[in-house]
Length: 195
Image (cartoon, rainbow, N blue to C red; front, top):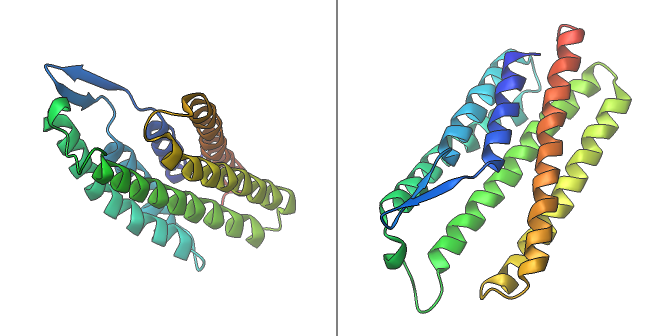
């Protein structure tokens, strides 16, 4: 499999794995998101340089990944060095946390779009219609699940609808795994035909 597709695959997988430890009132993420974005950036940058002509989606994804490295690094530092009891609160809600989380999720959505659109265009160049349709279906599923997940988040701020949010989190994770494995499949396909 092409090394750049492999990097994107692993970066996407690591984004979905979020293991946090708490030690003496400090949060610590074992695999911080900024590491995943560094890996994704590396793969997208490589693809944008490697693919002739229509690499604008890989390039755009690389630029946004670079921005997300900084954003998620700052968030990781805040989470790591901010006491759980003294979280940044406005009124009675963590509005900053919600806004930052939304920005990160929206950027993740755009990055996935750039990756899948770039793959779609690469399939289109070599007339792999079946694979084009598969990428389109993967994107549609991921996009719809993401929108539903984002739409119900405001209703779960106070802890209500926890069961619904848990179910949506599982479905969202599955959709994200499907995206990651589609990237892996694309790398294998392009390696077979030496693209």
